[in-house]
Length: 317
Figure 1 (tube, one colour):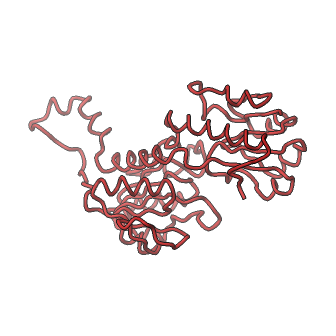
Figure 2: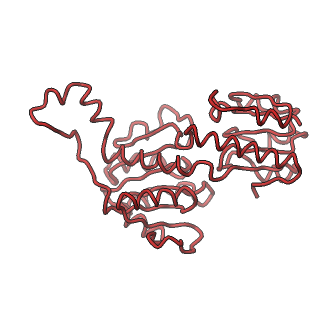
Figure 3: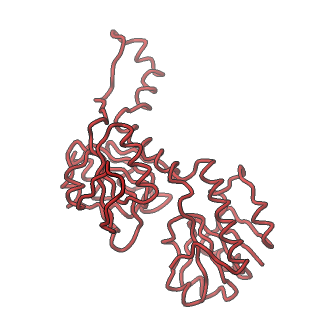
């Protein structure tokens, strides 16, 4: 079994153990692979493991030996699944390896927006507190979350974890999901998408990227939000029409945004959100805690082992 890992660095920059994967076959690991390198590197592979590498029909049609793609993530929009079905290639993904880490990061973004810890810490380091005439000061208004409404677009593993944290903060929680079935959590109120945007003080995105959800956040829906509200995205960048959000922040249509993902990663230098006011951006790290990556690597190994054993699991349909 020839196994090729095309972009292993973000999963394992050196603090994890590849040996369980090495035990499954002849393994070649590349930290990164440019598009023009993929076919040559994967030409003799029976199985490839990828995180964000794009595998489309142009590439897959040149890999006749390939029988398995293991996605080292939950989202698999980088894989042309129509093409993989055409070529008889099994694709698997990994679910629920990092809900706690992503939920934690969701609130880290929110707290950065409402408490401005970094701004005040830097102010203290710059000597502002030492020079202050008062025992305390604040550089910008501070916002209490208790009593505010958290609106969750998506209520899967991650959205449910975010809901529990929001409830612990004393927030009200409303949610929308495509599957309109009610949640078993009586503390969460299911609402329509428009109701969610209009009611919420914080809107947090936890839905997959599909043709229906691309640019879910646009001028119209931003106009439904309160001018004091915040938008959070730890899902996928294209859920947001970035020019529309940048304008909404500039015009104070909403109070701020906390984003861990952008439509292109790494982003172009002229991405309008990089210079938008009250926009906190982190480099797609919500998933990347040591503990979450350790679980992810084990689950990727389990998926590959199940395929080799003839009983594949977590198959992407």
